[in-house]
Image 1 (cartoon, rainbow, N blue to C red):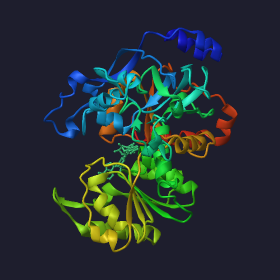
Image 2 (cartoon, helix red, strand yellow):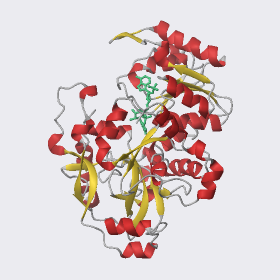
Image 3 (tube, rainbow, N blue to C red):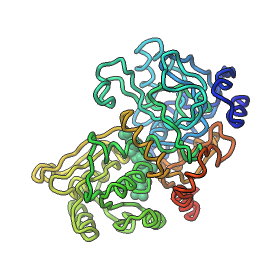
Image 4 (cartoon, rainbow, N blue to C red):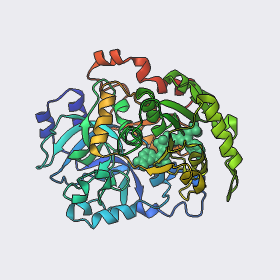
Length: 451
Ligand code: NDP
């Protein structure tokens, strides 16, 4: 890998990179099948990714005709890596076994280790014989929608494909590694003004928020819509907030700490709720919700913007869904893509049907949506949320930070990149976009003492 890194750093041509031999093994963050029962009987919050995530050498897989081998310069931690590392709600080895039933290429994924990670930026080293649009030397970002396009179900919206999977979560050979193997239709051009680590953190969360708010497949937000955003400085929330501001919507942002309130103000948000300060208690006990607390939240929203939200950007799940349905405006939509605090959801259906509200689900993004979201990053219209950077060897600590909500925005991970700050190909455009805007989350996290 050293030879490959040296060649990339020296600006070697695509042909030179293509002629360098690939190593037989590479460094990767993995969970191990033999440890999948290690946390049995423990509460979720006690399950520690630092114990289950290991960095070790694994074999380079054979390349399928529709795939590319990418030298991963940087990656990021997503919540799905937290789920994999605590083996919740299920160990991910079952996904790999299911993929293995799809034939020879799928069978490569069923291994006693799972290389995790669903984001990445890097350089293409090899392409399979069926790949047309990409070549060795291309600098890329990677999105995580893994679809076999020979299945007819993949040809309307590929997120509806029967074989749709999330790379590095439901497939092996993920991005938290020095190398990865991805489908060619996961490749996107790297935004030239960003560092490797800034470019690496966006695809999963940015594309998810794009589909949820901008795409016709999601809420298709229009100018003037009031959009209520839970976790507005978290991974998907931080991009959601930018989409609402860019698209002429009115964001109402919820966070849980004063430094996050300050960050939102610097992003240009006026209507902000600190949920910790407000002390909402939507559940009076494990089984009972308190409608008066939903009502209190609704009043707080009205006092800030004078209206109910047309769109609720929902992902905390069990803790908040009752409130989300309640505060949503008549005819509005609750867009949901997750259930961090629990997936068995309860809400009062009367508030839904009597006011003709709907709940609409969303999951990641199809290639076109991911590409469009990547384009907005490349045009400097959406900023990366990078707030801290970890070496690959500290991947467990980075996942721990997210598991315990100690972070802001996105945590980057350096893979092959030996240090931060490398990979900027267009410094003039970077200057035009503005260092202050690009590094806003980073500066805030440092000021607030978040690692
Ligand atoms: P983050 O941890 O970065 O951000 C989530 C934010 O939600 C936190 O910062 C926190 O903000 C807020 N939050 C957490 N728990 C609660 C709660 N009980 N009540 C209210 N707010 C809460 O995670 P991501 O944004 O990356 O992901 C969020 C969820 O979305 C995860 O479950 C993830 O798996 C899922 N996801 C799903 C995708 C899909 O395609 N379906 C894609 C990406 C993510 P604060 O404390 O400041 O309020």
